[in-house]
Length: 148
Image (tube, rainbow, N blue to C red; front, side, top):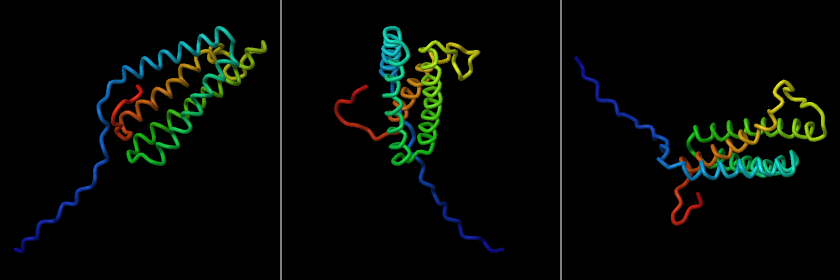
């Protein structure tokens, strides 16, 4: 009988794991942004709400591009793309239905759900909340003061 030499075990490099963090500050910011959005809606109707959420959609697009290009963890990349996709879908719903409702027409997208445009900012800002969590869990560590 011949003995085979032990095979060398090749260790695959493991991706960096997410680090623990406390999302309470992100929750507080998310709640504040939702309140600001609905106050703008109450004061100025859908055009102001559309402009407010467009700012965050632009930030989401930029953050998603940055994460896809620079992060090593595939879950973070996929989660960023999913956040962007559903935020864009609800932004389109907000724009189309919000403009239609502001000029007195019925909403063209899913007219049986009349309040869909009103609920859309929650989902759009939810994408912003998710992106902030991805950046905190998988992004580079910062030293010194860090804005929540």
